[in-house]
Length: 105
Image (cartoon, rainbow, N blue to C red; front, side, top):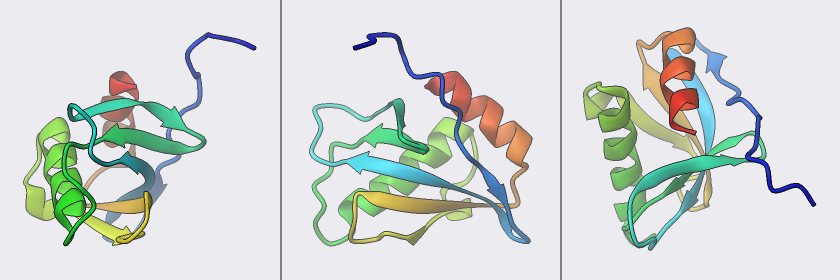
């Protein structure tokens, strides 16, 4: 078994509205952080519980802060009741988002 960090890159898709990518969320963590990749998804730890969309809101705010953009530009577009989510970043460039997020993993 290899203990080397994952060398996978985040799969970011361009759309008419912006870019989308997969996120795997770990709610109720001790701290908020991007902690690598899980399959082809960005793995994010959140302190909020998955109750009444609290974790989804915290995910949107955390990704917006990480990317340095307004939180209104970040939306969970699928997986609102699942740990496997898909985010939309409105008006974003795939190359820029990939560079920022791959630097974090």
